[in-house]
Length: 358
Image 1 (tube, rainbow, N blue to C red):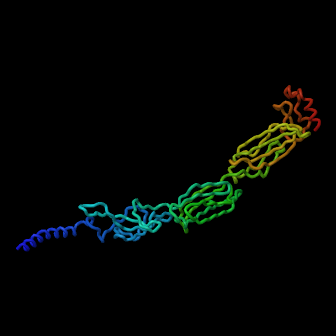
Image 2: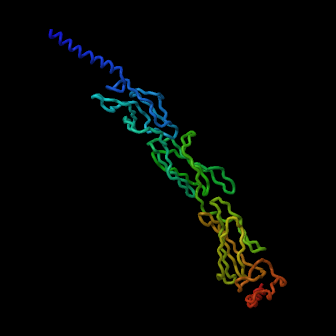
C-alpha cells in the first residue's frame, strides 16, 4: 500500500513538469539552450556592400562573401552568422545573433562596428616643379592597390608657338604607399594625372600645370633709325606668363669708353617699344632687353648703337643735348641759339664745336 501511494505521488509531480517542458519547446527561439537552426538577419551596413549570396536571412555558420564597387574594398571580405551569450535568465543562457569576419590572418573575429566600403587609394601631396610632377599615395588596405595604374600625359594638344612633346608616363602601383613621378615635362604646361583600375575605372584625376621658368631670349631687337626708338618682338608665354620686359641702357663715351649714364626701365607685357631719354652726342649706347616671368628674367638680347647725326632740342641736363632723329643736320635745320635757354646758350661754344666736328 505504501508503494502504491509513493508511485501516485511521483506521477502527480512528474506530469506538471512534462507539461511545462512541452510548452517551452513550442515557445520563442530566443530563450533556452543553443539551437541548431539559429539564423541571422541581413546586416544593415554600408549600402554599397554586395553580399553573396544575397538573402534576407542566413543560417548560423553560413559563410558570406562581401565586395564593393571598383576602387573600394570591405574591411572584411568574408563574414558568417554566429551567436553569443547575451545574458542569463533563471540560470539559463540567452543568446543573440552576431557576425564574425575573417581577418588577414584567416582567423574569425567578432565584428564590433559597421562594415563599410573603404576607399582603397588615398592620394597624398601633389607637387609640380618646372619639369616634373610627383604624387604621394597610400593604400588603405594591404595589397589592395596592386591592380591600380598611375598615368600622366599632356592635358590637350599643344599648338605653335608653344609646342610641347607628348609625354606619357605609366606605372603600376605596388605596396601600401609610394610616390608616382612623372619626369621630363615641359615648363608651364598643363598635364593630367590619373589613377585608374584597367580597363576604364577612374579613381583619381587631377589637372596640374608645371611651374614657370625664365623666358627665352628675344628673337628680334632693333633700333628705329627715324625715331631713336628701341623695338622688339613680343615673347610667347611658353615657359611662363610674360609679365613684362626689363631694359638696361648704358651710355659711355665713344672716345675713351668712360661711363656716362645708366638707366633701367621695366615695362608691362603689352609694350614692345621704348624710346630712351635724350641721347647724347659722342656717346655709345649698350642696350639689353630681357623678358620677365614669375621665375625671373630670361637671357638678355643685346644691341649697341652710336648716334651719328643729330637734331637738337633743350634738355634737362644743360651740358648735353638730345638726339631725336638720326639723320645728317643741314644748317637750316639747326636750332638758333637765340631760342635756347640762357644756361644752354652759355655753353653754345661747346655745342657749335661738336656740330663742326660732324
